Length: 210
Figure 1 (cartoon, one colour):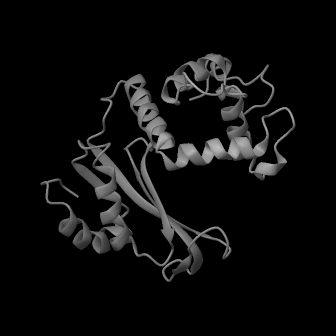
Figure 2: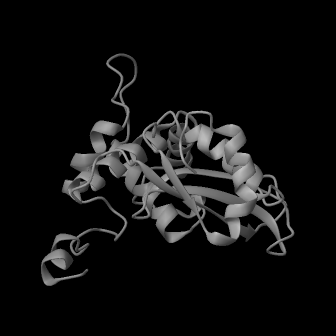
Figure 3: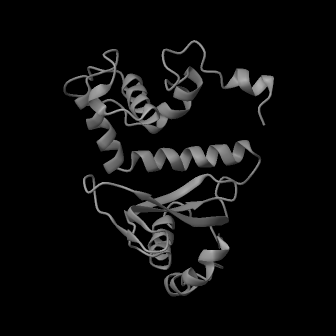
């Protein structure tokens, strides 16, 4: 709930752009990013500016080559973004932030219950695979999401919209075990429960309840 105190705490006033990191946010995020190499050529651009540029593009929904001139060159920004995507840095950051926020809310750092759902969106032929979701009558991609009971994202997987929920749930659960091994109870929306049960029972042999 927003109060005068929380509004002041999360105010973006005084920042260059609303997507820029505050000092407090950077203090949390910086230990999770790769440190500069001790040998070889030094970094030309500060990591904080690179991250600010990434957040500007993602928050504003603009193309990488439309970044303002005050940021580092867009090829450099995108190269670092792609590196974080491919080496798991973004997943590591999300993992730590979820645990920190759960502890802030007075809960155990690692959840024991989760909720699974999916979302299909229309896409063009470019940018990856796509398929037809017969249930929602959408041609594009589908995102299967596993969140804790407060809605924090634990694991997300994107693929063709042609993949049914019962087929996408199993791989999602297996992929989540490495980072969230204590999840023992899962829930889906009522309309998805019946078609997911068979897949979940076949893929989870650890005695977890789904």
